[in-house]
Image (cartoon, rainbow, N blue to C red; front, side, top):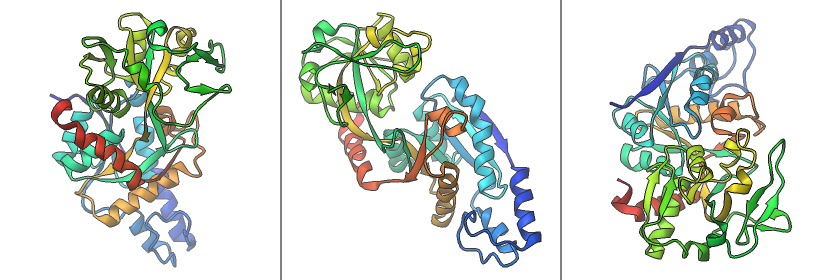
Length: 353
């Protein structure tokens, strides 16, 4: 049975705010999520702010990309924020163990919004008839890459590893094979592909999860193109994949860039012991998919609610979406960018089933 953790909230602050607007007759032009109210006496705005009638409760499904405790600690705050933007409509957050579980939740109608990586988004589209509505922004970018890393740079680095300084009491991170030029990482693109040819058949590789874009789909696609068959081991998370290589249990692994940061506080020398030697991508950032149970108007209302929460892209530590997924901002889904992920997913076939 799929294990989930659920929290439900109905924001009293949001309801109070709507009533206050009604009493004072203020127009809520900027904060009206639906954007269709006349704002004359506030009553129409208040009704439309929570105008989701297809479901009794909006359920958001999350899959942790880091320690599950971080997600559980913030799930109530996320539910409360969304509820507030929807005028007090009931919102619940469920935390799933893996991507498969959250997709199945949307298939059965138990989950109405899936927050997932790009492959999970495509799965939700194609297997649960969902619609991608939003994408995350990190470091000012709407895309990222797979990073291949190793504790055996003599085998996989074709040049001398170079350093990039890190903040705090953390040793510099090492990169090789042209990923760093003039002290800066190059623009996101495939890098170090020649080094991947050094991977021998049967080599154990630490992948992240069977549904992870950067942790499995994209790097496995590279191996398929090279005709290399490896012994893939699923770590269960990006942090754990880095930890596998840092501890010496496995010599090479994959994750999003740069997941080494996630274990650097406990392991300040991780960037020295685990060297990034190749990239795959670019990959469109993770995002949010809406269920077909919601109408187009409801999907747009929810889209605008999340955009209001993200504001101008200045989310930071202490904001629930940042603390859970390091989301700095949100934008409406770039369907053209997602086409690349759709292609990878479709060409991958049944290998990840």
